[in-house]
Image (cartoon, rainbow, N blue to C red; front, top):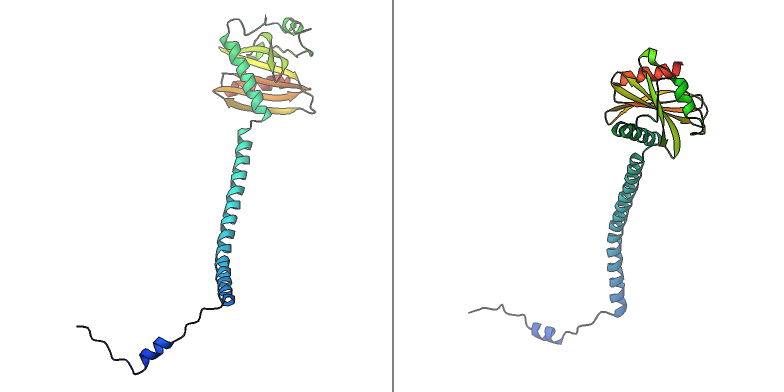
Length: 214
């Protein structure tokens, strides 16, 4: 059995006769406005932080993309290196393609280019230094016809590509290795030179030095 505490006299009558009032609309509106403002103040910093993070990620993405493009884009010299190497390898693979004119005589090879190019390539005899001339041929590099002179270093072929280049000043020899081949390039007397061989890099260095000295 449940027991209830006794009520004070008159308590039931007060509760029964009490009058309840609804809050006025103006008060309710003011409270709602205050609550909404507080919620907005809490959301704004979050939104600002989110916007800041988004901007930071976007900036990183742009920089990364630009760096990737810069690294991926080959330089003009890289393009030349690949073109002359491809031309050298093609000449080795095609029977009889090493030379269009076969001769160890520079006075035979040089006149052969007359009328075939818009320039006269210098042809040097390096047989006494261990690089005998084998002949010459025409090739195509960077959208133009170029001269290619073939030399030998023991059992190795050395292809020398040359063409006029409208830039001022000579440059020293720059050497590199690409796909197991040695390449060297330099500029002298208004001509651009590219030499390619599968011989050791030191052999190509000596070859370029001989050409620069003559």
